[in-house]
Length: 132
Image (cartoon, rainbow, N blue to C red):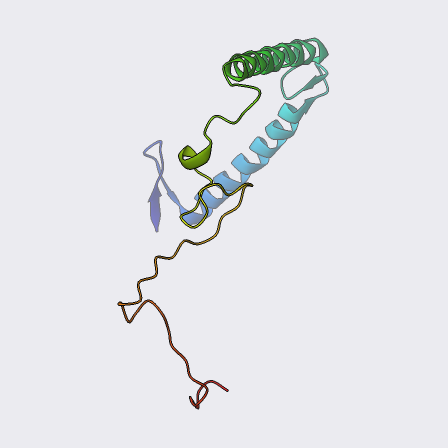
């Protein structure tokens, strides 16, 4: 069986396998050389000086990013009143239909009950055999 390769050269499966494994062997050696190059004393293609420059850049970058976050947070907080919440009473999102002035951060289901609708409530009696 003949295979077509990128070079448009036909080869047998055995030749293709030999080429494949020799390429893998060469690439694994070059991968190991990329991870740590003993000749140039480099780790992932960078020596100690270049790694320190990269670390200094990212340190400064994240310090500036954190500073901008703190600046915008302080600007936002300066517009909020300190002595009361922004939305109180009926305007608050924390209220419920039963108690419009409910304090705290909580959630409970607000089911609308209509007694005229038979599907609203499930009526059980003690004489039902399914429910002991």
